[in-house]
Image (cartoon, rainbow, N blue to C red; front, side, top):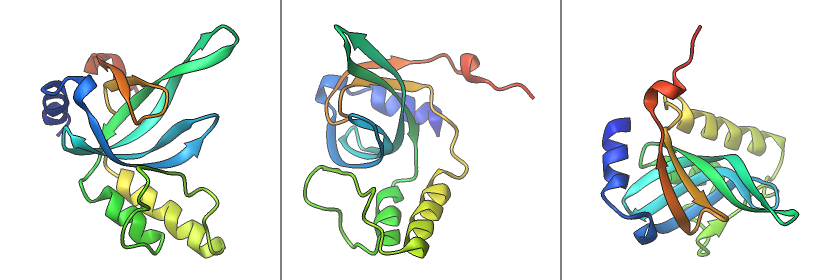
Length: 148
């Protein structure tokens, strides 16, 4: 799955990527983690910030790791939130939109289920907001092996 994902995204220049929906699960002066459905290239990923670029006393672009997820990741997340469709804005940060504690737990369990069985990606993008990407980096799979 990871090799086909790398080929899929490598076939489309990063300047031509189109974000269909971004669900921001973690935020610190911008998105730091979440789910992203790309329309071009067509795939769904979990993204997590791994580094930030410090320029002139402020953080600018960020480097995000992309991990391919199942295509139904966003509908599953929305269902856990009790929604049939995502809000119309391409970026949604639902952090405080829990009805109660059991709702919050259900949403967290949905995220855990979505990520279960995925392998952290070796694909990285440079972006300030995960809506527009400026660079694509492909890491060496051997650099990300874990030892036990």
